Length: 348
Image (cartoon, rainbow, N blue to C red):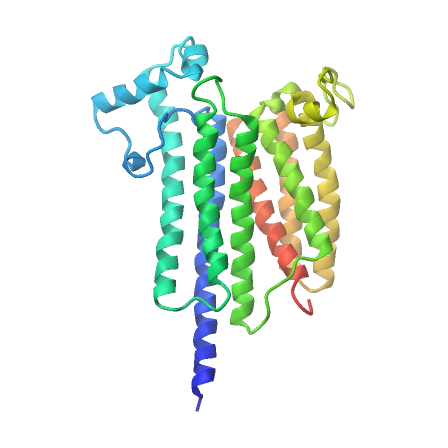
């Protein structure tokens, strides 16, 4: 017969497994919103909704008058005045970009509910293991920050520019991917707890891999924000040269690294190989420790990501390939977080 402490331990492990499954489901939603966010950017839809209305904005315009009012607000921003207006945008064209941005924001709302409501339920039912409440609240705060950063990004393109700030775009993407990695890591810690094992620690190799991947994702976001992928359509050369012609060094190397599309594109395509080298080492270390599924996930993710990146550039950045590239970037973050967690398990 089990004593009360044994029963409590069993209940705690069952609760930890339920929490892990919930966080993994939320992580899938985050991957989905990253993909939809990529399509929103590629279709130039991000500025189509000019107001941030977390509650009332959950519904799209339902009448002709409401559509005309939304379109009128969009016609007052620089993107319409300087780009889409002269191109002859119609209301039907506007509805297309509006719905992509609306779906993007709707997914953000759904993710918020999918996290907050179960969290409240687990909290009330006292199913959250000791030490995990602060972590779960931090994840909730990170999700809220992501929404705020999203509007901060959009607001940068409503007054003075035809597109959003590439730095704010990078912040928006990186916060989402940080949330994804944290969800995966916490879910894996909870699965370890369900098996009676301690949480993982970040090792030196895993930390290096994640830091290098973060830098690559940052330059990828800058590449997207500045449309830097369009400056060269050949590979491995750029404009027939190893190093591109046209980099503006007049304001110094740091400014060029952050603002010049030629240099940013160059860094993004070649830093990828440094990241790949570290991930190969990580994958081999995982395989040596018997974690073949995690090793396969890491290798497949970065290999596919590189192939998609090269194909995207060489084919003129078609929407479906560019969106697949961003989607695979999110999957690479999840796979790397998984591999880092395995390496940090005690006795692994």
